[in-house]
Image (cartoon, rainbow, N blue to C red; front, top):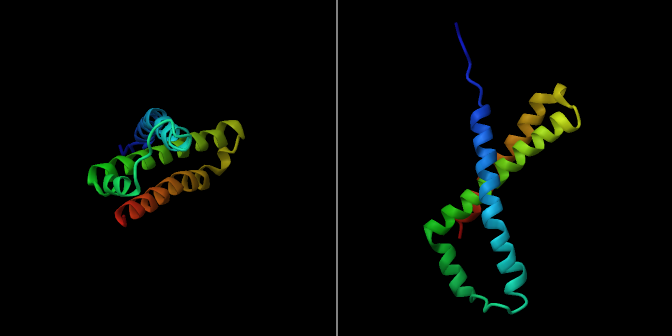
Length: 117
């Protein structure tokens, strides 16, 4: 008896962790770099300081995790929007390839960009 395991638990884990990380970190980053620094509510960091922070391997790892998990969160949500919302279950394979393939490609691009800093 050959039972294939479904990747569904892993995909739901990536979905939930991506949603949690995005919900906790993105509003802070958007507030700081989109509101507080441009309006001079807080003193913005200098270019040299931001560059030094981005050169830290731990910062790169955190930014990569944020990017990759947010992409997989998007992929899972978009997949089920197409399946259930638009009733496109007959196109299951192309949808899975597009959604999760896009998340993988985006994660590779994020890693490449973070490694070239």
